[in-house]
Amino acid sequence: MGRVSAGVALSGALLETACSHLSTSMAVPFHPLPTTTEDNFITADGFTADVLIRWRDPLNTKDKFGTNNDFLCFIPLNTDGTNALLWVNHEYMHPVLIHNRKMNSPRTKAEMSLEQLEIGGSLVEIIKRNGKWSYVPNSKYNRRITAQTKIPFQKNTRIMNATSAYGMVTNCSGGYTPWKTILTCEENYDIYYGNSTYINKKRQFVPQKKMNWYEHFNHPPEHYGWVVEVEPFTGHATKLITLGRFEHESATVTTGKSGKVVVYMGEDRRGGGIFKFVSDSGKNLDKGTLYVANTDKGQWIALDYATNPILKKHFNSQLEVLIYASYAAELVGGTAQDRPEDVEIDPITGAIVVALTNNIDQGNLYGSLLKIEEDSGDHESLTFKASTLMSGGMESGFACPDNMVFDGKGNLWMTSDMAEYDMRDGKYPGFGNNSLFYIPLKGPYAGGIYRVASAPCDAEFTGPTFSSDSKTLFLSVQHPGALTKDPSAPTSTWPDGPGQLPKSSVVAIQGPQLEKLTL
Image (cartoon, rainbow, N blue to C red; front, side, top):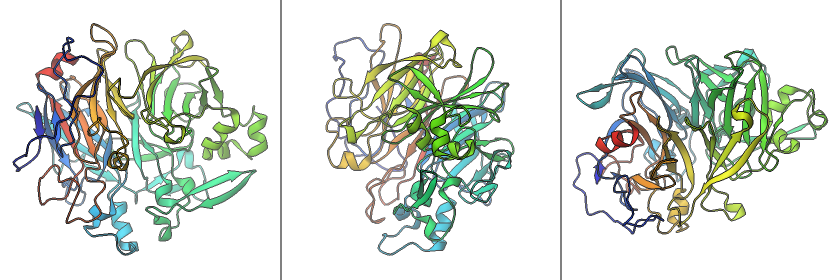
């Protein structure tokens, strides 16, 4: 087994019985990692892992790498892919770790202003030399987009008396367009700026006592919850109105048979919907129709104010429908799902796979993977077949699926997201820490679920993405030590070891076993 740490001697691993339905006598593609609760990044034999960049590493003379990294996007700069740009989302921050103090007094406006610089996204140049990846400090490409960056709305649309927003927040998953721009998704925006309800054409602000930036920064929640398009070589960003506003988890881009651009999106909340945008024509996101899935009927339902009398009854315009898309989706009959998170497309079959993480309100602790097969194999189709690809639980050996990526051979790589407080409270006994899994969908091992890596304490893995040659899997390690209440006694010290605060980081996974599976 491999472990990723720096400058510390490790005690023995706290290994538990492997949680898998596979018999140890059954032939397997590699020796899967058993469950563990050790505070380290651990890989199965045949895989290696190295920290590429960590929280507050300097990008240049003024910018530092943000915290709680999530979605990753690999953009090659040369033909062999050994030099690239890496986009990294920064979802949220932990005040105890940011300010290195107990939260025994209210945070000041100055402290919240510092917090705003920790989230958003990072662009960083990376290079592979002698088989190892490293980032390039002071690269001309390195830059930050933060919660303080002024970002215009698409086509200068006016929302709450403004044509731009003050930064972007809670950037979770995302996507990459055919015209080589990044889509980064604002998810749980309400923890910073509250939320708003819109019922019977009346708006009401709803405060959310968590990060509560609205106490010092008067920015309307309607400015957040969008997909943001970023041009990687300039850093120019735009909030896309056409894709709707809700707790966006992903924005996976493809094209239909006629060449229209299609974007699949999940809404990460209990009872959230699965959405699809289809462009009117051409390769752009400026005009098109937003749909929500009714998975009971196998239909995509348009959120179109002009043609739907229900929407006309509750809204004044198409813009209002898009601003309050979550409510609109419920009104037209979108199916309430068990926290739709990442959405990926099988490169072999074209099927859409949606990670439904869980729904504790409905007694679903373990989640599942949903498969959507568009009729005629056309992503522009408005009818489909939905089925469960696989369910989480003790028998399958995984719980709470979250982020995913397919390799070129059609194998699925999946991360889990058991909440740190649920793990602490013992809701997931026998599952160990959050993990990375390899799931072949065809061939002799099809349907097997094999643990590749285990995360440090309190952390989850996010944003898995492959290098262009499929020899490296980049992976975010998000919120190690998330349960820390006193910085002098952190619940994790990964990656730097005892006496150090935990640092979310990006890790590069390589090794002969990875190449055997992907090439």
